[in-house]
Length: 510
Image (cartoon, rainbow, N blue to C red):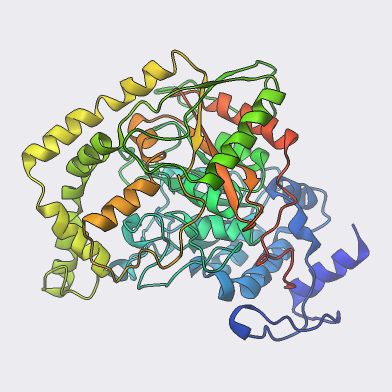
């Protein structure tokens, strides 16, 4: 190991700092006190860090202390973490087998899943004292893979603010590429943590684009597996109707490795994919849809990204053909709202039970969530039935498309970026807010309803703004392997690993 790196690791782990690096003045003029170190470990992905541990070049405990210093350096800037579990991670570090895949590499978990003994808030003041007693099966898989949980990442309250990760409980997460821009959501804290270099691999969930939208906005890789493909993320051992668990990462191989470790291997629903380690030589027929009928037209910067991705695919020998998205924007979201918005009443009941007041007056829910509950209460049972009946047809619509093409390519979002204050937790929901939100989710939400796998791949950065723009790829249900193989090929052809956000550990001494 490099002598300076070993000195850095020992100093970071032991708290004895002797290197001379000028104090770094961070966002908003706040000075990070103490001697700082340039962290060259940031160049390693999670599997690379695991190899250092396996070779005894570093220990899991030493690496954990480095990650804690990263959090201390950049968290005041990006606000990505809702709960820190440093002492839990320290207690576990030396107990993790180096024969496991990740051998003690730290991970952050999205604050919307049960980790035994760790607070789960779903970004809400309503759940600030909620501590699940045991792991769900998915988290058991994460820990069995050798990952060491170091904290929980920030989310919009109950994921309902959608594309802006902000709440009254923990505040706003900021995009490391531009602090005035949204991280998107709901895995906004997770994606920001990866883009900022805190960790190369972070857990996320996707219920309407929640892994893909933040991955696009933060210039990293985001994967949504097929519905029910992974180990259960629910306390009852079942599966959410829309939500899947997986990862946001800097490299494809990290995501594929965690996928393998947390996949349901029982074969009850899908034949297991196993470990995907590289591209496939098969050339694909890829359908490209740049817009959606009735939806917001994709802006010029997004279309430049799509043109660039199309050329890359053609240069690699794939066939790219024009197709239409198999759903209509107005019809889809009318029925989506009808099917699901009435269900938010459960949060109203919880808030009233705790406070003895209505949800709006409880002081436990953000105005956005409280007003969304009221909005949902106005939806009739007939509208809910019609909505569910329509959504039951959506998988067939995508199935028909995938009889013609192997992959569907589209934008992740029809615009390049969203300002971090364009939606706020203090806003009360109205029709224009919902339309704003749905237009930005127009390409992503339907794949959750269809149950199909989808991913955002960071293939383009806008020249004028420097902001990343992801490209989304979807395939038929159960065809997760095809997406990973394509992702490996795209990563080899147009590597993104060396692209670092200005507010990241690559540029900020820790």
